[in-house]
Amino acid sequence: MGIYSDGKVYGLKWGKFNENENEFEKIYETEMTNDNIKEVKEVYDNIIDSNDFIFCYYTKCSSTYDNSNNTFMTWWSISKGELNKWFAEKL
Image (cartoon, rainbow, N blue to C red):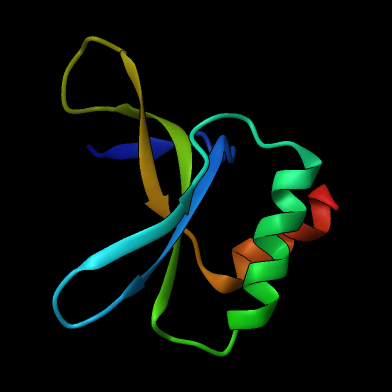
């Protein structure tokens, strides 16, 4: 049993953690254009060495916890390696 992602990126968000709160700088909740992807890549390239930032992707999920077979959208964390692969595929 569990929650499973379809693996597709429908949007991205990134943010910076500090000791008091997590304030996200940018959120894309809809299908991203090439210009949006380039903008995120530019920011990513400038902060890649920072461990203070997290990236998440918006994806469609399903759950085996009930028999409804409903899908839902949610944010899922993405590793730097996965993000680099996604950039390479999109740009």
